[in-house]
Image (cartoon, rainbow, N blue to C red; front, side, top):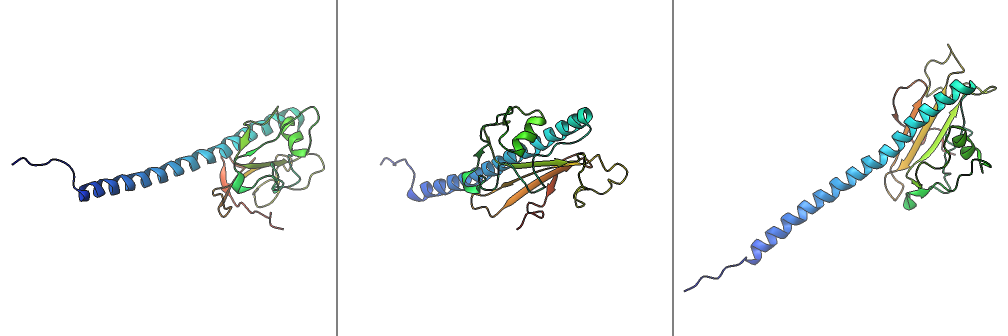
Length: 188
């Protein structure tokens, strides 16, 4: 009598369950990798802003503002919705900047958006003649040279619901980007 070869239904279900578990692990790992990659956009842009702010200061003895304060982000809150990430930067015309943010970015040497779309909002403010002291929460010792301060911030949503926000900041006092409070004095 010849014996039949094949898989039983139980063996097939065990294989399907193992493949399902491996797929869940792979998807979670992929999402984590994509989140880390997305966060690198903000960190890289802040490091570039650091270099551009210091270059601008060495040429003009002041820093550039892209907003009125540390919460005046670009793209604006009205255009930056978590469910629509990434958002487009919009067109930049450095010959006739549409707003203070674009004017500031153009002054720093950006001739247009670094990428067509962004996952982050950005702002940088710094000392210029007539400015008040910097935000005290970000600066520990500016009394020796009150003219040498600037701050750059970036923030984004980690989920489409907008429940989880992350922010980074770098200042003239810091050598590297640090995690920041996403709602720092930005609540109305």
